[in-house]
Length: 375
Image (cartoon, rainbow, N blue to C red; front, side):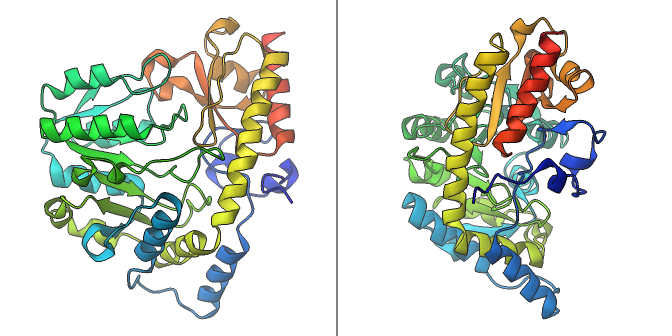
């Protein structure tokens, strides 16, 4: 049975952000929650803990060890769990912890717009200075632009890999160029790899720690995105082999922020549900092709090129004649996408569409888009 097969009626029973933010007649394909059921192994682990009253404080390194096993099996990356991996509350709080350990107020931090909105919040909100190096028109890292920015020796570079919102999967060569340049500039490379398992079948994801120069980088990740477990807070900070000083400087409370239920269910997912995420990736790839076909048929002026990573579609609506596409689609078409302006001021004519939904819901979403454009 397809993973992405839940009906709208089933999903409307949920009380999470995706399904309760907008009116009940609005179809939500915005925030990065997936329309999936809980994997049986995850459900079993959760219920077993509840039945046993195992609801206390977190213990041990089981989550870190589960990730290390996954990293070895999927990417050939070998980690020393005790030396390199720290458990934390979630990805963005983990990134904050690394920034606090490696930068000072007023320091420059590089980001690549269009970018996941919390990247701006975690930098500017804690007194650091944002330096923007936008992606190229092709949606890839601008290595020349990064070289110029790194010449000023910023304190840190916050990279998203794979990239959110456009789904670009950075190549090993790109990552090595970035990591090497950061070492030469004395810039700490911090990488959000929460979407690492969410790549199309046959596409190779490269962890930054696996490339030359990556021994000086720090990554932050979680099982929360790939297995739809955002309700259960747990994250991991993984330092390259040359970062013991960074891990030692992490704020102590950041290492006490993981919830025990989060550790239990994330560990179960990584241990028992890798085949599940592989099937999910295949279904998402099919949804990307479906969206491209439907837009070509019904909203041909919308420009969309399926990317290799994430379950998110980054769609250019500049030629649709809409002053604010996201608002028009929501208010007139009753379908909610993430506004492009949230990812970068220059992308107000773009929308981000969540494709972790059934083909039927994606088809209905495009039908509603077409109704707005052709009205």
